[in-house]
Amino acid sequence: MKIIDHDRPSGTDKNKVGRWIRFVSAMLILLIGWGAAVAMGTLNGWLRTPFAPNGNATAFAKSATSYIDRENRGNAAFILIENGKVIDEHFVSRGKPVDRDTLFQVASLSKWLTAWGVLRLADEGKIDLDSPVSRYTKRWQLPDGPFDENEVTVRRLLSHTAGLTDGLGYGGFAPGRPPQSLVESLTRTVDASPGADGRVRVGIRPGEQWRYSGGGYALLQLLIEDVSGEPFNTYMTRHIFRPLGMNRSSFVISEAETNVAESFNTMGKSEPLYRFAAPAAASLYTSAADLTLFIQAQKSGANREPAGRGILGAKMLAEMMQPNASQYGAEIWGLGVVLYAPDNRGSYIIGHDGSNTPAVNTTARIDPATGSGIIVLETGQKAMATRLGGEWVFWKTGNVDLFDVLVAMSGAIRSFIGGAMLIIVGGIIFAVRRWRKARRA
Image (cartoon, rainbow, N blue to C red; front, side, top):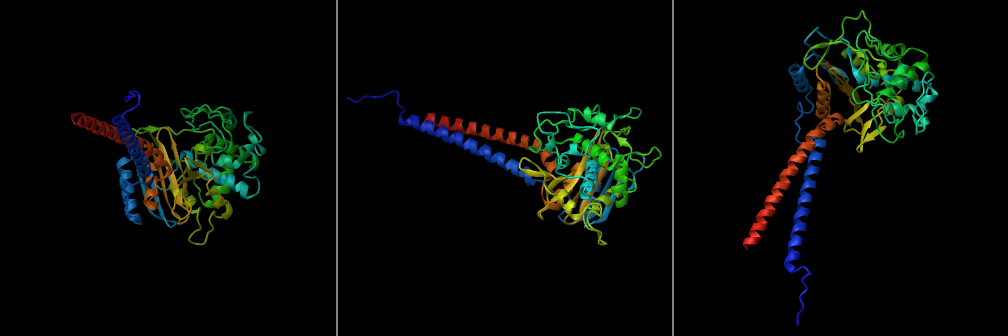
């Protein structure tokens, strides 16, 4: 007599299970493939159209100035540099006119210049980049914490890898409101940008990860003052600005200065200029003309001027441009400079952006291999300069820059979700039709 085991799956049941496994596997493969395609497309700009044909600087300048004229809500200065020479400049304002000598407050772009001040001390042998910053600061020290403050080196402060968790961003002090002292600001910043902790302290293990820190550059300002024995602006003027010919640049604005760009909000309304306790991190005043000289100093000049112009030696300048911090597997920061994207020559497009309230946005970027660069200084828009900088990087290299990737990620996530929903809905419709067909059979 044949015994039937009703608990054992029949051949038909096994086939059904196999079909469902194959269906789910196919759906997962499609979803993973779609996610990979979205990620690669975002990172490589597959669907992105450059501002101009590669190599056509005239066309890029025309597109850039048209964009500025269309989007400007305050004032803007634009400089395009090719092979070390200015080939186009454009200035526009809704208020008082601006020109190549107008002083703009450039927010965090200030950090690049501050880094030169620190590296100058290192080049002179007055500090060691790999020594603890506490060796050089006399008026203030990092508070005790769970990590060894001796690991907070000058190099790590320059590259935002020192483990500081202040998250600064500074909002600044309105006219009539005295700024904190630098030391008070290091202890607890009262003008911290929204969401910032505001206390300069070691909150994660130094050297383990990149964490942007305005407080780290306030600490570097203190280092410059304590090592040089000079006020920060005096030191920067004597050792960086004047030798470079940046005769209008200053971290301290004179009340007698009249050619200063007005500050505008995103509605085109004039706003006051704020003052800062830590200008090294947030409050350089400079002009398009002065920044052009600074950009050009990153590479040897047409008349055989050395890269660094005698302020930084070739070795120190090269070290500044080397990767010192990475995120998500990409090299993103040198010593005081952003590594925006590979330049396709084994190095990087470098520079720095700045952004602050109510609507300040600046960028200065250069390909050190060729001397080509871009400068955009503006108020009234929160991201116009950064966007133009990103368009320039993509036009020059075909690579999507660091900030564009971060901005594009939100759009990429939406694209992935939309595509994933279509895949899932399509899969469900396909499965239902197969099921109905099987039942009819």
